[in-house]
Length: 529
Image 1: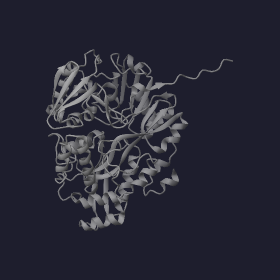
Image 2: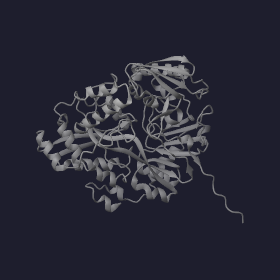
Image 3: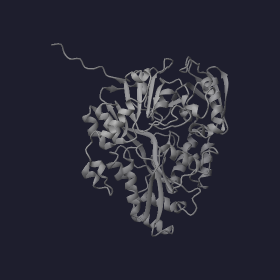
Image 4: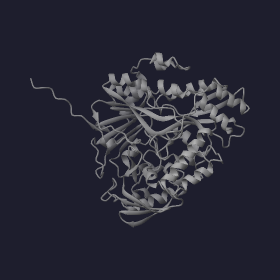
């Protein structure tokens, strides 16, 4: 690893230090392990998982779509549909669906499902959930902003619902794979917004206890997806090295979002390091709205920055070849992905020429805000990206932000920087254009980039009545964005998870970790003397 890293311009010393259990890290972990009170806290969990963060509002079904932030949400709630390994919609709370017209779909709902408080799941639960998403508060939340095309839901009978749209959506079954349904009567009793974290679902687990940086999940006795381990504990350990230390010490059974170079340490601790390709594409967004005079307004500048960074080197040496540089803000297998579209080449002389043509032969200065510790190797590759941009005269000042704060700043339009760490989400790339185009999903969600020439292409794709036409429009949009990029394209995000060797059933599908499928191997018995 040392010889490989010498090829990089930036070589932080911390990467070369041997892993050891630091007293501060162990003290922090000890506080976490004793951070809850009550009977549930005294019972030893069958599975302990170290994660980078547990948002204070965790439990709100309408917030969050990415792992590991949503790990608990996946366990507490079910979604209307799911997504299979090929990126196609699959049954969830809905078992079948059909398009009735350009703006109407019918969904057949799973019978006999109950929420963890005993409420029966039926079509009325979708009605009330859709009403919340259509409210001003709901449109300001992640899921409500992603499903802005849902106008209302009508009850046909207890197990069949009609979803009425305000615009055509030929991919609605794919889109509602993020739609989590809370128990309606219980939800209506909560004092929002703070009470939203106490929502109840139909998933395999329910919240048993909370503490500082700690969440205890107990088996939901009403669940139709029965878990194999009845008690699971999530421990928030923001620092990657501390998460690895917790795994090495045996304090946790799984540690999510480590780095490729942690493989040997995990294996020495009777574990394995598993690469997990997510349904996200990482990129550095360009703020061109409310940023007067920015060089990023010129597409030649935006393209030059892409061509100045050696992304292949970063994926090879910092991400263990687990992914590849991307040519488009979509993942392979997602709807409309164009495998024939080539990545912009790494070509610094060409990048310098583009800057000169745009009127910046001497370069310029930019600021960038990023979150760190959530993605494998992110601190290192942000440093290397800054070093690469410096070779064409672009001076990049990088600042760090907590994830929740950066989300708020981006959605409200108060980023305060020229670039920022961002990602696409899900299996339909078009969903994220509401945040990087002139189309605005809701008053509370400001786009960060607006290209008027792209708008007609987006509207044509959104209004396409069949999948074939829609795929053709998606290819045209991807080709346009390659030449007029809204950000510095990176790669499909790989995460690296350390898993104890005596665990089985860890098989993520499209960003869903399916905690209910994980079980522990029976201990080997010693042969009789």
